[in-house]
Image (cartoon, rainbow, N blue to C red):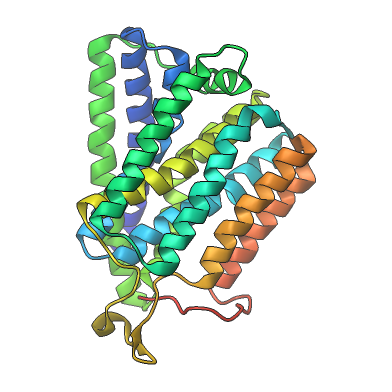
Length: 340
């Protein structure tokens, strides 16, 4: 039963997420909202809605490991898995000026997220601060992108144009609402099934979040990036990944902490004690891989002006290695043990 719940949850998340984005984009177009704003908001961050709902559902049920693991795993998968596969299918030409601002901001918020993980600071005020930072960044980006000579503006417009959705206003609203219902139901099934799987096999909930949940909720980004790469609109593929990673940290972690303040230190009763202290739900391997994935993206995209097939192979190989570390198939360096 739990396998059916996980499979059904992933299917509903993917289908619901797609419907939500397409319905919302269609409504926005009917209301005369520009492709620039659509690309920056509804498309750039809309693909992260499955992660948001899943994380809220997980924390509400006390499965913090699934929630945090989902965000870390999704950000790692977006770069190493999604961009790796997209680059292997079609080498990605990159315009550094177009992604310089968003890429730099992604690096900054990733460092901030790692610091919050290290010091275990996920209180309600921190959550509010993250959401405010996201809103400020969106406002700044929209204002800056109105300069038509800005390469970033063209990239965000292309993001909006990749979504083929031109329904009537009522049909668009209906599709968006159906998509939202599907995402909520899918998140409930996925979290319930994942918690059951972790408890049945003694697997850490964090591991489930880093793998099954993260890969499942990253499917919209994978689909969008593959289509963009095959259409030779590579800047859209990278722009979508960068936007999604920013929203995952500021939006998902921010909203989750604002609604359900949490700790990444497992409770002694559930996790056991390590020298008298609760075990961290996040290992140094996870934090290191998150940082490494961002550095690889910067190295390949900003310096070489393209992601070639061999560089995509390196990204994908790094992801396979990370999966091996998580499941103990590859010896892991010293660090915190995974909590359950």
